[in-house]
Length: 122
Image 1 (cartoon, one colour):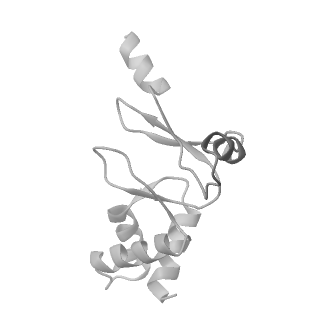
Image 2: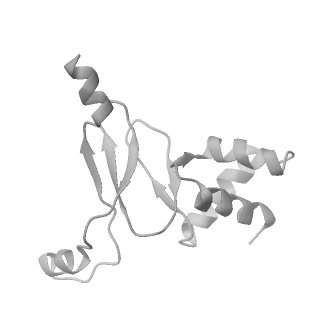
């Protein structure tokens, strides 16, 4: 792994947010000021291919990057807020329903977040 790849992985693993490539780039520039955005994209692609980083794609928003620790996501359909939630693992149930073994799943639950619901009430 390259030095920048390690730094990017550390940024993602230490973050409590779901960062975009541009946000990761801004954090990386604090410790590696000569880095260019293409380096971030190239390393993110490699980290995703290696299974070290998880890409979270949401329609109408830039991709975000996350830790690989098993968890699911809540997505607000109004403001686009992305937050973590942990449900019971449904791999066995999905495999049984499909009749084939599955490798993994990516569950994104759409809802209206508390902030947006509160705004709608006002």
